[in-house]
Length: 172
Ligand SMILES: CC(C)(COP(=O)(O)OP(=O)(O)OC[C@H]1O[C@@H](n2cnc3c(N)ncnc32)[C@H](O)[C@@H]1OP(=O)(O)O)[C@@H](O)C(=O)NCCC(=O)NCCS
Image (cartoon, rainbow, N blue to C red; front, side, top):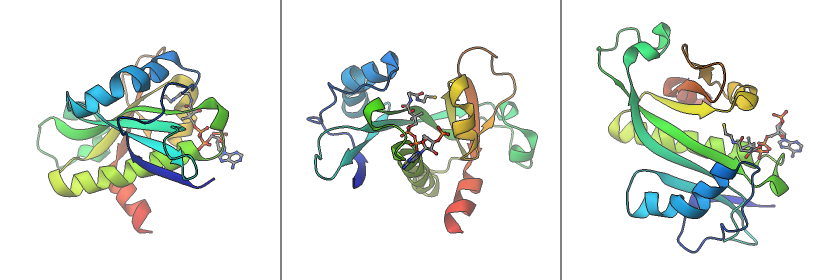
């Protein structure tokens, strides 16, 4: 399999997509294109195999956001002015379950990191956040995401990754 990750296109094959989570399937099928092209509130990137370049195997969605400075661990905001912290929201990430555990999730999140660094170089943003399902915490922690204080125990947990950490890792 030769995975390519690119921006969602209008005629991509999304109707058969099934990651096992209905809201994530539904977002890709019903909202991702409109949010990207008409509303400009989130851009989705899809993973496809080179041999079937329109069949979507996985996707993620990025949007801009901000959080109050006090929501971020002290050591990451020391010395920063008391403004809300500009950041990138990894709003959705999913892989079709028929293609799970082949590294596509990892390839997608790695691409999200590369895009985030490019954006940070152009317009300034300090971190990536995501709202992770409790069962996925360790999956994100492996990539350096840290749970934020004050997230509810039940339901998605807000996680944070300092883009300086990503930059250092990619420069190694
Ligand atoms: C979470 C999710 C995106 C992961 O996608 P994925 O493509 O299966 O992820 P990866 O293949 O990169 O990694 C998954 C596991 O497979 C393992 N793996 C990766 N490549 C592998 C390979 N070639 N052979 C065997 N195992 C492999 C990884 O080590 C990882 O192990 P773990 O389960 O112990 O963490 C996917 O399971 C999903 O869409 N789930 C439903 C929606 C969801 O929960 N989204 C996240 C919202 S917070």
